[in-house]
Image: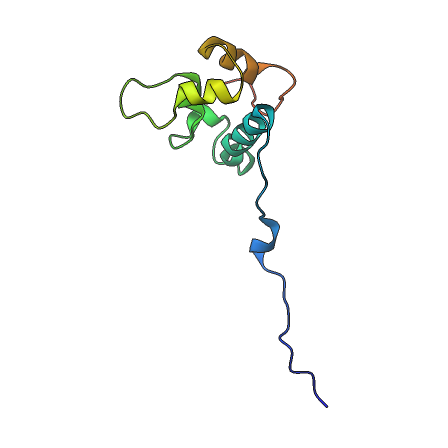
Length: 101
């Protein structure tokens, strides 16, 4: 008798999985983790150097062609204003972002 069950192999996609973001702090860490992808890949030295990264718009909101709802972001993070967001990103508790070159 032969076993005709399919062979299960590992895929590069196996390392990706959905994670519920339940707090503003977790959301901020996820944002910073994503902003650091091109740094970790060696493409840039700092996320501010990657033109398609949200890092610049988070720290310096645009007046036109806005992609990020800053009021919603500040509300989710329970921060009063843009300066508080900037301070929070640069706090030592989140050592993901290096000093800008």
